[in-house]
Image (cartoon, rainbow, N blue to C red; front, top):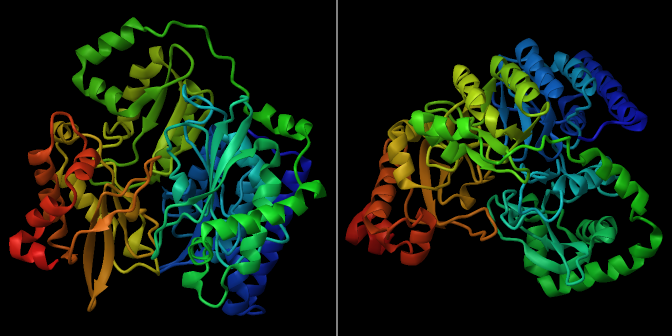
Length: 556
């Protein structure tokens, strides 16, 4: 993984020193909250319902075991013993005291981490495929490009005060695991007919109150020009993006109002001028960064491990976990292990300090000292020998992290909601827990099959409800929490925005509504059809009838 050089280390250390001074001036009253607010936000510090919240960047979701132990120590020392992994490969601490935050940032800097640009109208944490570097189908390692973008965008003087926050994702696999089409800029690695590497560049994707799927602004951009082209897109957005209305300030609105063809012309014209300015990196620098992501020294072992096979047969619980939580690895004899942070009745994406420390130890023992964070709020051990998988599963079971539900209905994406967030209209976590308990029977989950269920506590959509096969949006109705149901969303390469099925349900009704949707699916599916395939075949009508009846369906 990427290692800080002297410049990187002094960069984050100086930022800690600056923030320590800013906090001291706020504590003494020399700075008002209004004056302090933009300073704390530029260091990832929000003021939530009950306390400050610190959001820490995990670039492209990659962590060393040392960094994981540090996060555990921070959770135990400065918070309430746990932390929350987010849908953008960040981690959040929900209860830090203001006076402790400089010390937390200093602790983070000691392990090459920071909270810079995890808030504010700037380029946020760049996200990538959690299987990068090990996916057998991958065209190129997306972490290399995400790291280049991270370095280019960190405190970029021209793009530190954009009209609105800006999110970039990179994927190098035919199967998208990054929700790339729901980002301000989505980069899809491709090769042209000559075998040269490049990107399809999408702009204007996003969720929130106006969900949109990104549009292709360039079918193939030679990889060598990535930074100058990003600079061109950002420069056009910075010049033309609206600043009079925060709800219309994202680049997706600019794309919608300008039209993709005209925007493409503007970007290409800007790029023609930029290409000659030397923004793009020489190949030696690209190779220097790529050198941080070379393959480890894998052992040459057989892909068929007898013990691994036998244990799946002897222990059905283990076999079920293998079927749901393991993914293929490019190297024979190895597997990618997904660790669900969605135990039945738990808060989606949360981990205790003790669990984080145990995970760090297990990463050292079984996965070459590294782990990944997925945007689905789960963790990944990318390099596990198949001969070690059974022992790893037993160790995960000891710390309540062996839930075999990856990609099933209880693997719920959920934002913190009204339990923590000052923007939320309704609680997300209790709804997720009730749905998990309703569908706790793992055999039933396997019978239902692959399904994504996403919950957001407000229209800002941090829980990606628009992109869930089943989406739930918390709304306020005369002071009461209600939940609007959407169906048919998808975050993968076949991205789709879910459609609202009708009036919102009360908190007491929403779990039964999900049950009605599932039962409808089970009755109408053909053979081994998945939920999303069945929905695309039959449309929303049978689900509406099940939820609202014939008369109400007609009116809904």
